[in-house]
Image (cartoon, rainbow, N blue to C red; front, side):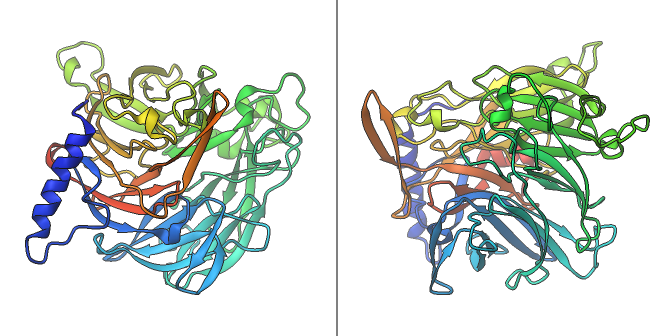
Length: 497
């Protein structure tokens, strides 16, 4: 991990940007001169109408690249319409990453919903029963429902239908109420939607809700699923991980990796996808939420300490370990990348530091952590910068250059981090970009020893990549969208020209 003082890095970056500005036709994006960077460069920026942003998802429309950004609850003025609009999803053309163009902001449906934290997009030609000439999008509608849109023309998205509304939990343990939605996955090849929300009567607000969306205009509910003890009618102590529930399903091939408890009381669960979708053939009702049916597809479960969680569990298969080249034991291993989210306790470092875990799943019924990655608090003085300090998420998208070589993390006030994972037992940071605050960046406050301390600080919330290797990072504190490209050693690692 590189540990040069941030001020010197910032000064060096400012110098190079200043030189660039002297070259005719060479313009720097807003905020580039003030940002701290190493092996990363800011390519483009958009303020996203000063909306708190959650998740960026890029989709290819032929030669065009369209970015869909889900947002947290809130509201802001939309200059395109001149109307104060509740935060929903923003749609941008990022074909030219140096000039992202906002095509549309789509508020939630109805008066009660606020925010569209997550979206997923599929071409109709990929779906088993989709219209091959159309592009479809699933989004969360606040905490109230899941919706299907036609986004064939991304500048004119068309609402198609409500897939389902969320129910009401039997217990209201979440600070967000007794019904929720959150991160999801839509598997285009099969059409299965692994949605995340609240079925009626369960003891938890975030659970896996599987739907057959192979025909986007005729959704079919398959089953609801959670850990034993969460189901309707369960008795006994309320499970700790249930407070935050399921955070993200990650499905690859015939395996499902479920992360529960994003930053505390975490649980990793590995499932057999076929068994999950079909249920136990010996059961009277294979999808009834009995303990036996909930355990039937489980391959492994790993419970974490109370102070760490499983925000995401992304598999990386077939990494050849450099140090094992002469060993008799298998030198090709499978791993999961699991960041533990830095939650509200990370404000000015008032909780346990969170890390990204790398877990060996070569023997998948016995997952085991083999290494961790974290950013050092010093010399960046990240605790005293304010806001959250710690990891949030990693790039969900796969890319042949990145997959077995480099992972990109969002790290709240420490910005965007690039980590070399070619040796999963020894991850090494090879690049970072910490954006500068703007006039839109919102203030974050925390009470320490009876005194309130407030800071205006960057809070990079989520990151993703596209097929061209560009990195998209969005800010929780309303700063906007930053489009980054790798440079130097980091760029060489992923083999980008």
